[in-house]
Image 1 (tube, rainbow, N blue to C red):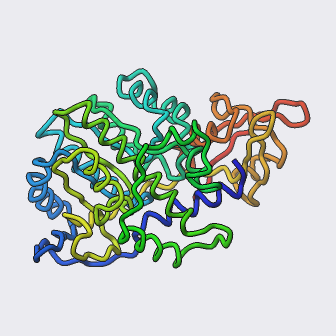
Image 2 (image 1 turned 180 degrees about the vertical axis):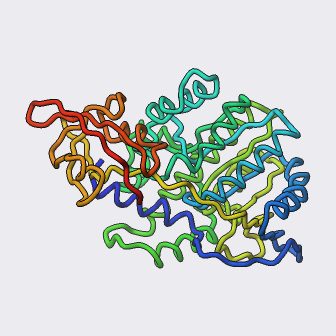
Image 3 (image 1 turned 90 degrees about the horizontal axis):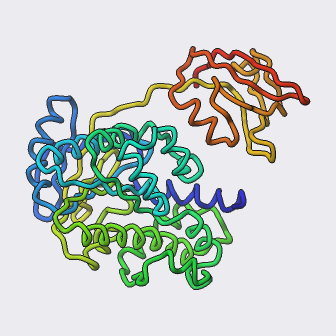
Length: 381
């Protein structure tokens, strides 16, 4: 994959999240006509009250879509709360995940069975190659699922297919590439089209990318995930499912939910996390602004790294960083971190996942044919 394509996909992912991150106060739970119920949570006690009010409503639905802004930890903790409370009422539950791609379903299955460690899950599912967000945001959800044997369902279309659609469109796919997408991809929803056009015109920076191509990528995501959900529900007719996806795939029902409904009629509800979301009729069934939450800071070595033929090379060292102080140089080949072998950049990210500022790590490198070890005291962001 070229750097140009990575840049295009990196633009699409946050662009299609659709929700800003500014703080805003939304009125306490009210319901007016076709408007969604909206609740702003200001304390743990208030969160308990809101969840106690909405969970009985959600528990009656076959599918519960819970949206997110991918980088917002509070959104993911709200998703976890909803999952935990629904599971307490019904153990026959599955969780559909936008952030894992379909070819890695067997990896998720093995993780739930306890056959893979967390590090093995990340490596085998190619997390750091296929998703740009911090794994720690999602960890509590995945651990709860593993601890309770809750099936996880990989929903997303393979990145390689999205790359090809973004380059040459659906009609330009080979037969094998097209077979990775649903047979039916419905582009008839004009409201959906115009909503995407407004987003594209506000944010697009690539002059050589047309809106039609942009919409085709979105359609492949939404139809691909909807097809996976519908197929799973058909195979497990008694099972309830919680679907976790970016709010842009859920709002107004026009992304994933309506496309599931086209394939299998089910009782469903959409819950969106707020923070800057404009609450208006039809956007969802429920809008909740959860308690704010932040991940702890990570410990930093202070290096820029890249994959090379022989492994992972240091491509730059930040002045006055832990790496600079310890004596690491540009061009050093990283062999291991605290005994964990390093062969690609994802290995570095996995090895550094839970490191905090002030932690010490031993980095073994190869420099001009000579192996050397350096002890680093990690810095803060």
